[in-house]
Image 1: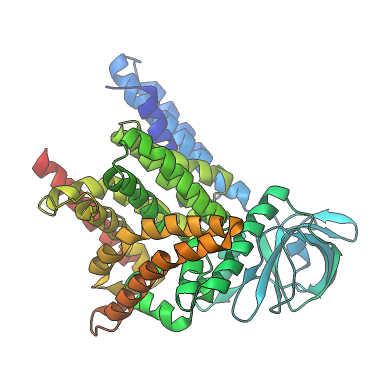
Image 2: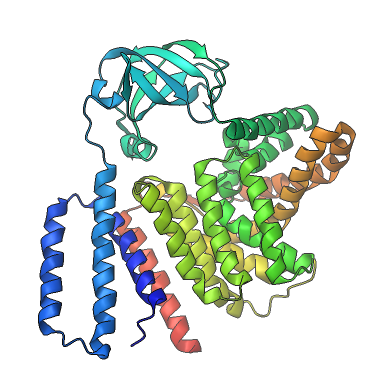
Length: 495
């Protein structure tokens, strides 16, 4: 049996993810797992004669179970014991604390959410973060050092949504509404991150100055991640047409976008595959920076780039190992992502879809032409493979199913890389010379208008969109079993 280091490490890392997943959903004390592991190890040692034939399976199982236990342990130690060293210990009380805004303020329609960390209370340094809700136009910025007076609350359920688990992924266990705030020292954050946010805000001001609506809010959502500034009517159009992922800097969007940009460079611009990885890396990196470098976008970009890097070095079969490794490293840093971060789940499944389904769909769609300037088959397979793999999760979390979504995505997604390239050029040229930005505005406006009109037309067609209320988790499992069955059936037929 092949006992290569790569095979042993792959299964070990995969079982680390399984361990994190089990601990995320099943609350079993850690000390229960350890005796089971030791008993299994003793059993194997008692029956093994250490021949090379039996050593292979033994090593794979040994390392897999070891990393499985480590995954469980890593998740359980990430759940803090709330004591007097945590701000959440004071939930339910009115307190005055000091802290720094550690993330870009999240502006909504009716309020702004501030993530505040590096907390002190009565000169005592505290762990954890707090989410503070303030009125619009409050003027607080990333890096401001604040003194906050408010009543702390524990996040709870919002309908069926577990707000506590959602915030816990960011080490937030307290919320605060409409506090009294005094700025102690402004702009105390990272110079690099402050520069990234400054570039983002200058680009937003330039868009507001030049673009009319709704093209302005659409390009802001597409490049800057400002989805909530898109009018509700237009967001409904995208939801009904099955293209809502385009508006969000989401795991699904970035995963598909990474693949499409790679196809664009290889097919349209005729750049060799080995060299196309580097401009793709630059474009995705600029995209993440322009969006303000949110953690969710960084994670999704890493997964998408891991897949196309495997293609770049000519080893597409190693793509699965790189995807699993990237996911495991992220879970090692923050194991609560697996359960609480929908973007992480979508990006992981989208990249798996591109890896497993892409080549198979390319086989089925062999008769669809790939033109030089319009690689229809490549765009179609990339789009469908990712969307099929995330469909069960989309139904579970959002309950939206659009029958016209595949067609609309095929017509829209080929122009998205071009919109992104023009968007970057628009942002950079606006900082250099406004007249150049106005020249780039026209082709960009035409493409944005094309997308908006197409989405509006698709959303207006009746009886093609369905909303499921409370899609069951067992349904998610059933759909993924069907996908796996189809993959295995295809492998048997073509082997």
